[in-house]
Length: 422
Image 1 (tube, one colour):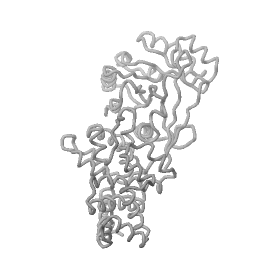
Image 2 (cartoon, helix red, strand yellow):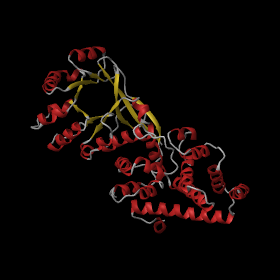
Image 3 (spheres, helix red, strand yellow):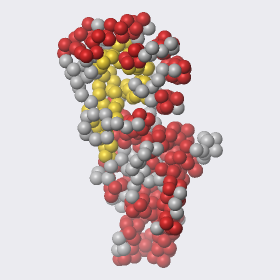
Image 4 (cartoon, helix red, strand yellow):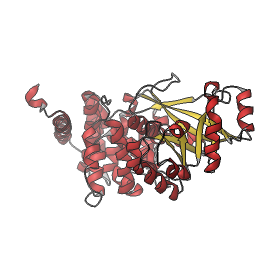
């Protein structure tokens, strides 16, 4: 499925781009659709970091994201470096002592905070405690709000807060904002939001997100987390892309989900699963069909089991190769483009691009089984020094394993056993 993020540049007084505001979109229409604030922020973060790529969106500059009261309370901004992220407090947030404490903590950690101008017109006794933590006030500079400017600018001057003019739509408005002491600018006069898009693999098992979230870091091992993640193609691909992000990048090429988790650290992975589960908790999450899940998991499991049968080193690498090999059938994009985002072991990478090696041989055998190509099955079995009898035994085991995975998910999410209710 296709996913989207809009980015709108932020300019300084020299008309240089100093950052981007990242905005939720669900298609190529340049308007914000109605959506729960928590989910919108989670979508922006996931699509920016794990799908489109932050470097493509921000070109190495700072980025700002809106945070709801709930996500601020969960300390979600602290998942990202204050060198990169500017925290915008969503308009729906209510001023409270709790919000003031959160803002104080974020400022102490080095984050810049942006407050919308409408907050300044709330008659709240704690406003003077909130404003010292704010770096910028974002001011709607459209003509119909011009009567508010003097009051906003007086408050900003009192607390030494920088002024950020948004919705600058004409050159006259830009000139006026500069005269009045504004230092950051955004609006259609400079650029409308630019929508970027890419593909995303839908979720397989939402229960796996919640299983990881419900385990404490102290009791959650790398092996336990790997066992849950590798059963879900969507989560596995996001984890592999995370290795390739600027903040987590390393030279090590990955040969298994376990190796990816070990490289990133359980704590770091669990934080990302928390963001994913925030997004997937929406009323209508998108899931892979049972047919696609059956294909993906059975192929991955069969590749791994064949590798074990023939005594190959690192059978988990074959599982990963089988898992990723199904992606071309799920998204309309070439394998070359898919692999560009993934830091895979060279042999796995080459096999997925069609280069002959042992990974490719196992993949060819599995695809021959799926398509019932008997001559090819016989040929590949001989090359791998295994019997067709063993092959079909482990194929049946792989099918049963996948069926049980899907059944357990149905029970976990619906409370109904498909074997009984079908």
